[in-house]
Image 1 (cartoon, rainbow, N blue to C red):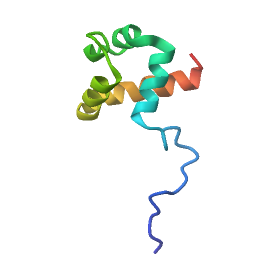
Image 2: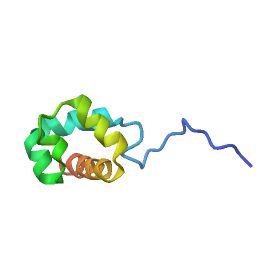
Image 3: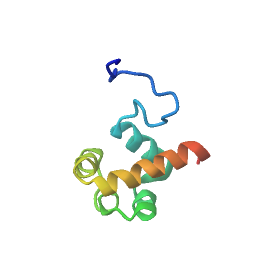
Image 4: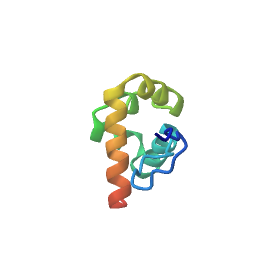
Length: 80
């Protein structure tokens, strides 16, 4: 039985190798804080947002991170 290689390529996984900070930078560039807050219903993007505070919130709040990941996947698929 082969050991699973943690660094293994995942060509069919668009999230493989993408860090949360990279997703957030991309989405902020495409939508801006206010539109992200409105689209996702996440207040950390509406109330004095910063990358540092948003990352801290998203790292400790799974439901919010999932929303960000879904928007990221949708936006890269549609080239919004």
